[in-house]
Image (cartoon, rainbow, N blue to C red; front, side, top):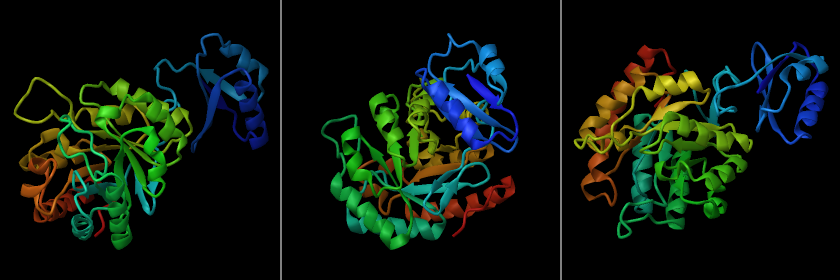
Length: 340
């Protein structure tokens, strides 16, 4: 349920209105746009008399029930695009960013070499897994705390903000210096984790589960926003279908649909979608054409010897060539060009 306030309402009266609502057991948040100010109620609002609230509060212009189960992420509630700020980098409508790096951090030397190279090619954020969820319990699962330490060393060397995946909420104290917390596909519906990262007040990159609908993705984002954290980036990374020629099937239609339904930035991970490095460049170009706000691309200095996902990783020269092509396409689409 949303209440659109009349123009020029003093902040003091808005706060009083929110306190009155919250005293009845609801959560509320304020959405301030260029044309209007909205107070959104979160909770079971079925018992609220909409007309009575409007008539009994002189600051309220009108009220409206939001029929979708997701409220805080809903574009009807928050018409303006959310811009997510990561250190000196902004991602959102008109601000295209590329996140690049290896699937797994393997050593300090490896991640620093890759970080320097992808930055020179134009990437604006560094990715790398320190904690790796793997299908097999015998597979390489990352360097854990050492991996985080090596990522931060690469950040210090290059200035690139760091994106890395968290496995569970007990690890949050280790992520104090990490710039963006990634919630991976397998944890998309780990609701306890979503609530905790919502309280952590740090940008979150939320990946779509490999068998989840867009509504389920938006409901997972809702968990984060309902705890007070609006700095969320959605990531389409492919879904599982009957096709076996690729690792997953990239759902390009998700990009415009998500941007229509919600106000959060949407990026695409073509590496996990395809599982094949030869498909990463064409899928990256397709994502730009479909309106994505950025890309997350796996890049390795020696893919043949990668401890994880080498088959889908571009080598450093391939990544550089792709970035040269993407810069031209970004400029053509009217977004801010990637800066070297």
